[in-house]
Length: 270
Figure 1 (cartoon, helix red, strand yellow):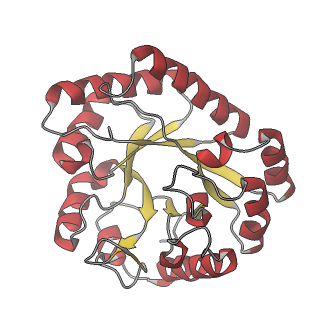
Figure 2 (cartoon, helix red, strand yellow):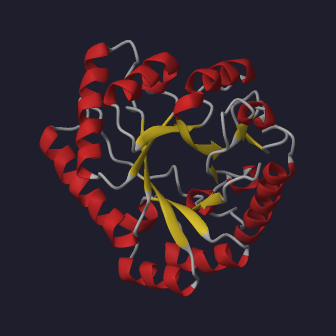
């Protein structure tokens, strides 16, 4: 069975991703080398758009290079303890503007960052806001990411929430929530029927980033739990996890190509 195309996440070539700066170089400068490396379908790190000097220039460059923005990797905050209803409504409208402007088919949203799954009141309030988002974006597939420090810390609670929403345009974006191979396998067994997208990354025992083939998680084993292949995004490469001063764009893109080739050639696991 053939795989859907593997997207490239622009966060992989953003060494300032976890700093207050967020963006080291404008996206419009990063797109040509990404395209030259052979990546045409993208998941875009939202700060690459919100901090862009010109969204029009980004849109034009994507068109010139025949690149397709598929997933908006959003940082919309829906945690009721962190944002007011008015702020959420305003941010949803801002996000909708980006989706409409670039034609994103899908949007990544965190599974309630900072919400403990046992906090039923916060989970319920988050679910209501997620439903509000789904109603405002009826043509956009919503991907709820199984990030740690969120409702995703309990896969059963997260799956129950998705079931309660009952939206055909909503599913899970799987990445291992637990940095433990056995727990990650148990997680995907629970979530498999609801997974619509995958973030490819791997870790070592110190929780640092590792290659897809050499880290804690056996991706062939994890992916074999899915009832059918789903789209994926290469999210990080180990060599790209460094300071902006040490970042090597060409080296990171070369490693990305090798990582994608590994997934494409793993064979026999679906």
